[in-house]
Length: 282
Image (cartoon, rainbow, N blue to C red; front, top):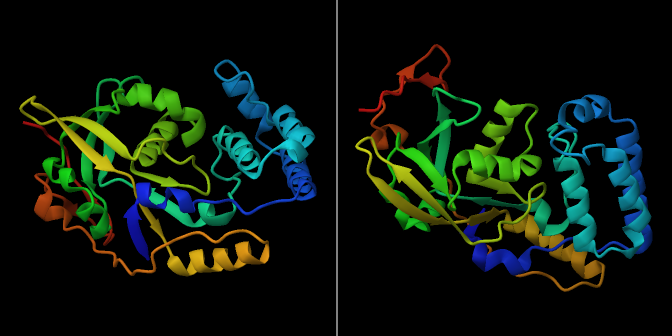
């Protein structure tokens, strides 16, 4: 496994090339899938007020009609947007090429905690650190954060604003599920399903129990298997395309010692991998 800054691998993110006929056939498969999508009516009923284009069939038909005119990038992004807007983790579209096998992480992880208004204005706190040690090494400012500190803003947006901006990309079967997905979207992106972040960094504003505000800027850090990149390059070469650059290094996973960094004591349960705690800020 190789871990490096997203800024250093952006140029190696590439979709496999399709012929116009292949894009047309792919789009036809998508259109047929949408015609038999069992949750179509419930999605329209629940979300049409917020998202007038929620009906997937007209959009799938448009994708089919213009597939032969689109570039590979345009086609893949439109297909991804269509499936993500369904907010259905059981109906997904996976991108091709190195997008399919690349992930991006930030150094911090978050959780929602009980608050007076969980849906409208949820309280989100730092819950841990990325399990990949190399991600932490590339994110020195993450050491400023403390587990339990409250998230005030992400890239200048409150969490509610961030969720509203990205809710048709993050997914989630309902509002609560959507917010859980938005938290995951802050922490990690799967480029097989998610757009690549426009910025190389995420800026968090956090608040400690004393009410003091501070800022943490951490980079997006990419993760991929070099063996999969090598295989993708072999396919690209057979298709007459230029191969992409990548590092063939083994950045071992290191589990973070959560308890040593956490002011919250976690209690064991009968299930070995489940612990619990009651968060009580001072």
